[in-house]
Image 1 (spheres, helix red, strand yellow):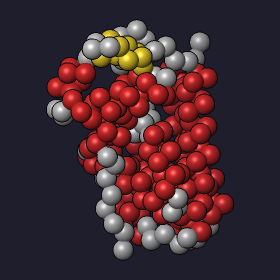
Image 2 (tube, helix red, strand yellow):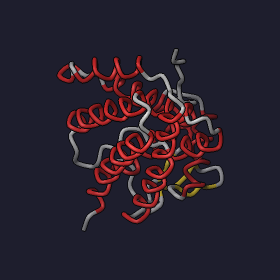
Image 3 (cartoon, helix red, strand yellow):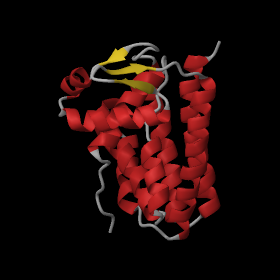
Length: 212
């Protein structure tokens, strides 16, 4: 039986802030206030501080003593490097999950149900299932270091600056189902290829905002 796992709050906050930077909601040079972000997200300052530290380590922001942080300038090469690492690592995690015979039947059923009601899809429901699918696969790979690296790379739904969320969700759910089917059927190479394709499309979504 699958166990319900949730990403740590610091990882979820980091992902929210990454998405805001990748999409251009937070622009290069913009100052971010620790207190302001915490109030906006309805959380304490502690997980936001941890998220700031993670973003700084990744090169997305520069911390300022007692003044929060400032958003760094990033380009297409930066985005490509991040997502290529995700392709390599998440592809490996999916292959390992398939080889180990991970039971993903309940997740597969939920994904199919979500696919059948896209016209009334709730963003929070989608993001919750999205997290569960990826986290379950990382855990099933049975490599704690691999899982830690992937938690650090997580950025949530990869909608670009002008992408329709509904269109992205529709494609993403279809891809999730295909990945879970390969894992369920014990097909490591197919699981790897489908996961890599899923991450590659997400990368392309983001990169469109950096063209020209």
